Length: 143
Image 1 (cartoon, rainbow, N blue to C red):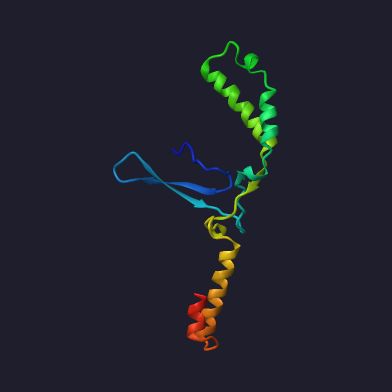
Image 2 (cartoon, rainbow, N blue to C red):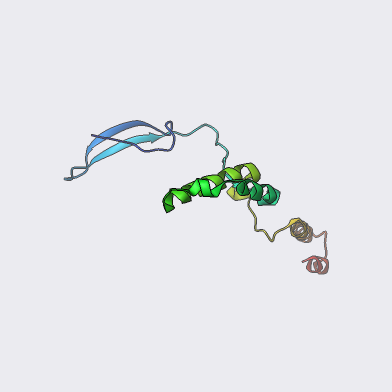
């Protein structure tokens, strides 16, 4: 008998049925339907935006914590958990987050707007050369 089906969302799997034994083993085959939404959901992944962070406030927030009282009478592991919680609370208040772009929208850090403009110009020149509107020498100069 099937005990458990694990998913990260309740609505992803439906119509779960046992389909009999798998050969001579005690295992049974399971048939199920993977359900999906009609339109694709956008990713909600976020990343810390350190460019807009207020590190002075971060330092002040952590400086106001009475560490002697917070660590008094605790084991090393408990001290670590207390420290980690304070750092995460300070991080939430001082370092904003930004939405991460999709996998297809990413480009290398070295590919800035200037380089993208030059590549666009190169593609236009190539297209013009193929159509006979730009001379080969002019195209090679642009490249």
